[in-house]
Image (cartoon, rainbow, N blue to C red):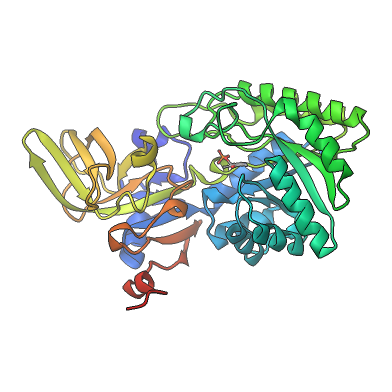
Length: 423
Ligand SMILES: *Cc1c(COP(=O)(O)O)cnc(C)c1O
């Protein structure tokens, strides 16, 4: 069913025997015909498989999977994961609003981020979320202040900066001393002692998140070991915690890479939690949705500037910024593969920036105007990072299950582009 290009990836995208690229049982050409391009296509089954895989890896211990919704915040995706049992890891008041709107129970929501405003803290306390992760002494004071004002108690975990190198891209490394995230590990115990003295704050967990797309998971184990020592220290001082939150960071396949799966470290981490008598919380984002999504786009023109061949498609960096921002690699598959020798091309969008590209020097089968291509592994940090740059309406999103396609976000209109503006 699948050709080698696509079969090398663990994705729900494969080929029908007539050669056409499909998501689950739906031909991508059919999706383009009905919903237009560019369109994000997600597989419900693939998202559920990823969730179940992680859930199974930790089946032996109490655990809660809080989906890091910044990876893909579509309401239908959130609702699907919520029905499966997931909570949400949020980083803003807007994400709280979305998570609640999608039906994720507040007592499964954890709130991360270095810059929570008082208003956001108020909203989260009013919703009665599970806990806040605290990233600085000033934030702890702000949470105490708002909780006192509201006559309530805020449950908190301190986010530890364990100073371990996650060996990933610098923009998605968060657990090094030089990064803005978390509380330096040597200050953590004192901050718990301070928190325990505050009347409207209840320390209930400890958290770390060291980075994203961690192809090797040893650094997570190192971080969890460091955090576990701190948790034991905190317990010895009479502060009883309930949750060990290990953050996210599990990697997906973008090209040939073969990331370690959660099974590789589950026993180690589960043992740590059990020894401390803590329930596990994990915050996967990319792992749950990354390989489950693709950006479907159509070739507008091809051209040659000297020796360089360009394929210009109707998606651009405003739709998927990962190649421009992180120089990241995405497999690109034509929906119908034309016969002929591969050509080395740059696949680019129409935005007026040289940084607007999806691939450089990529060998591709021949492509002609009107051909469809799918940019694979685009389910995470795709549509959520989209902008209206160049006054481009943001793409539609569809959710596939089996042979069914559901439009879960309409393409923006020109009127959407000017909403709220005044002449
Ligand atoms: C971004 C983020 C995650 C998710 O990271 P992934 O690499 O997508 O799994 C989890 N926790 C926190 C605090 C984050 O900021």
